[in-house]
Each structure stands twice: as C-alpha cells, then as structure tokens.
Length: 376
Length: 200
Image 1 (cartoon, rainbow over the protein chains, first blue to last red):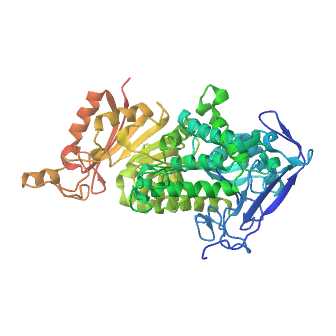
Image 2: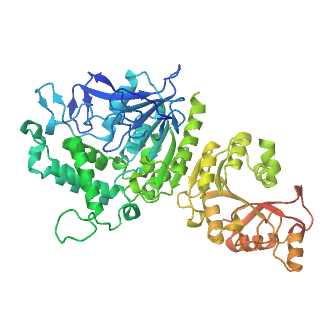
Image 3: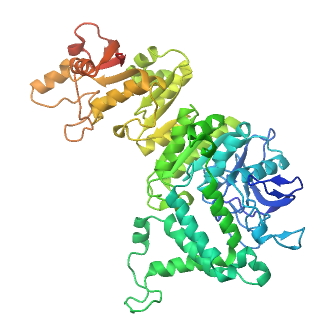
C-alpha cells in the first residue's frame, strides 16, 4: 500500500468539564476517539482537523494492524505525498460526539444510570461538535489549526469553526457542503428518520435494553440516503435497467441490479450503524444555519470569519448542489474574505467528494501545498 | 518572475501602471493568475480572479491567488455593486459573447474598469483582410475556423460602444510590438488598454 500512512491506532480523550449543548442540555463528561497521522511541528502550526460527514468517523486514513482491510474513509486524500500530505501536516480525525464508533453517543453507557443513553442523549448541533472538537484541540496542544477540512456535514463543521473560533483556523475547506439545508433536503432526512422512528424495534430510542436493533428502519434510511448521494447518470451508468437473473419474474423479489445494490448497502449499514446516531446526525444537518439568528443573512454570519476559504462543489451533486456552495462564496465575497471556489465536473453526485478525481485532487493538492508553505 | 511576465504580456505593465498600491481588484478571465500575482507582489492589491477553465483554477490556487470558478457570460451576480476599485478584463473582451452586458457589469461592480484587447484596426490586420484573408498574428493567433474570438473590434468601435453605454473613458494606452503608439493609434496600435468608469 504505497502512499499510505500505514498502520494506525485509535486513541481516546476524556473530558470532565460539562459540555452545555445549544439546546441547553448538559453532558457532564464524555470521551472522543481520534486518530492522528504525521507529526506536529515544533510551533504546533501544522495541525489539520478532518471533520466527518453523516456516517463517517475517526478512521480517516491508513489501516489497523489486526485488520489491514479496514482502510480509512479518506485514505485516497490523506497520506505521504497525497493532497493532504502527512509528511507536511499533522492530521487529526475524530469520531464526533453522538457517534457510534467509540466516542460518547447514544449507544454508550450513561455512568449515571448504568444503561445506554438511548433517547436521553441530547440532540446535538454543529456548534456543539465544534465546541467539543476545540476541547480536543486543547488537549492536543493545538491552539490554531492550519486548516479545518470537511465534506458535506463535515464542511458545515469547517465553516462553523471559522465562526465559533475565528482565531483558531487559518484555512477552512468546505467541500460539497451548504450554508443550510433546503426544504427538499430536510424532507429527505425526515423520511429517513421516519423509517427509523416507526420501526417497531426502535422502542423510542431505547432498543438496546430490548436486545433488538431497528434494522428495517435504518436500512430504509440508508437506501433513501444512498439514492440521493448518487446522480441519475451515475446510477444509469452503473446499473441501468440490468436484471439480476436476466429476465422478468413478475413478482416483488429483487429483480433489478439497482434494487440489489441498494439493499446490500442498506443491510451493510444497518449491521454496524446506530439508529440514534443516525437521527442525531440528520438533525445536526437540518439545524445548521449560521444565518438563522441574523434574519437569514449569511453575509452577516460570516462577518466574524478570519480564515481563508476553499469552497468546492461537484456538478452532479444535487443534494449539496453547486448553487449552495455559491451562496457560501457570495457571503465570503461580501465580507472580503480570501476565498477560492472550484466547481468540479464529476458524474458521481454527492459521493464525488470521497472519490479520486484529477481536477479535484489538483485543486486540493495545490491549496494544501500553499498552506504547507505558510506553516513551514 | 516579475520581469518575465511583463515581457510576455506588455499590457500587464500598462494595466499595473494605473493601479495604485493597495487597491482591490477583480480580474475577469484571469488565466493562471499571473496578473493578480504580479499586482499582489508589486502593488499589494487584494482581489479575486474569475476563471472558467479547470486547469487555470488549479494554477491560480498554486499561484496563491483567490479564484472563483464561474462563467463570465452568466454575469457577475456573485459580486456586489462598487465592490472593487478596479475590474480588469485582459485580452478576453473579444472572446465574450454577451459583450455589451459584460461591459455594464464591469462598471457596476468596479469603480473603474480596465480592459485590454487586440486592435482589429491595426494596419497589419487591415492589410491581411485587404489581401483577402482573415488576420493571423501574435495578438490574433487563430485561424478563422478555430478562433474563440467572436467580437473583434477596432479602437474606434470600442469607443463608440462606450459612448453608447454611457461609459466615460479615463485613459487609453496603445501599443505595438511592445512600444507605445501615439500617432494614429487605430491604425498603428496592435493592442490597446483602456481605463473607464460609469458616467454618472
């Protein structure tokens, strides 16, 4: 595996200072799991924070010694000699609070009750995540990030960093993201949540005690999500109207290849992802709207930002369309912030941000190389 | 690097001469960002480029120049009125389709506009047409069938358009072969740089 950061291992940070959520809820103590790649330089100026999207986690690059096939979700982007070059940067990936990959979340045991948090885990916002991430940065001795980078929901965190902690971010990279979700986008999330909430095995979020998992709901939620992450063209190219058995069977079994693919994706996801985490992540997406308390004026929201920005969108991404990225760019221009915007021609829809693409990677590499020169 | 850029693009020096230290600049069709980089290094300007080509977007970013990927033909809706000291369009006017609309956008977004373009009225161009062929030269290096240039004009033509659009010309710099042209510019100049603003 050339250009890989190689074997990595997850680490754990504990926090005893209560975190007050935007909702008013309080979490007295919590843990975050994270991984790091590369070396923090002497003046601690080369740290990069990678913020994950809905189903992501802290395992961003490399692989585990005891599970070499488990490769990080952004391994094509991060590693020695890759666009986010671990020879130059100290890269931190974490599992967000409320997640289901080791950080404190709904499936964790609440020390006060001895049972999983379940439905009692607070509804979390992007602002809350950024606050918790800042505390992780404090523990790691990083006062200012060279860059905070994220795609989709991760891009929202990168933007929020520039608003919550303007002095702590040199560069914010918002990829395939949006300044807020549209009604259509919230609608998709609502259908996904409804699938989970109405699953009889959901038990109002406390299914852990019943020894069941709302698999059917999670599966449907993921199937729906997956449709929206791909473009019409990409699906047509990959599956077309191809039949599994080559003929029509005139029944309701899985006949078209796309059905088979979606169910496979749904099953795979439902086997490991926590239903409550899915609900929390989609809510965080729905709630994100830095202009909400400013009469919807995004330009005013970005007035606080001091970072330099790279905004990237993908032509066939209809879930986080180029128009949404342009709104971000417009607000940044209004504030005379340094910003570059690249609109990548790609046929892979929203998923494009996770895929290798010559132009996308050239933009990322060139941008990151400039940052590397700044913090060298 | 600064000198080589100026040698390669004499219109850059003419443009830069009009731009005071610390100005804000929007460079439309900014290519690889060379002009903006030059202006930043020599004039400490802050600004942005607008480009459509993928390769140029990546090159601008490598040049540490802010660049927005956008099609000039769809207007400058991302930019607010009077948001820049200067809006520059260098050697691009002749390749724009909605030229009139773009001129109006330039004087809306910028307090001043600066445009450079090849003079179709240059005598060598006229001679080639007189001899029966479309002009091909250093400034117009294309054959008629592969040229991106759809709106070529002479200096006179450009000045008539400005008058028509209510645009006041503040300065003109005409060159040929790297030297300034003072006499009969519409005949003897191969490249022109104009500085103008909305006549209000």
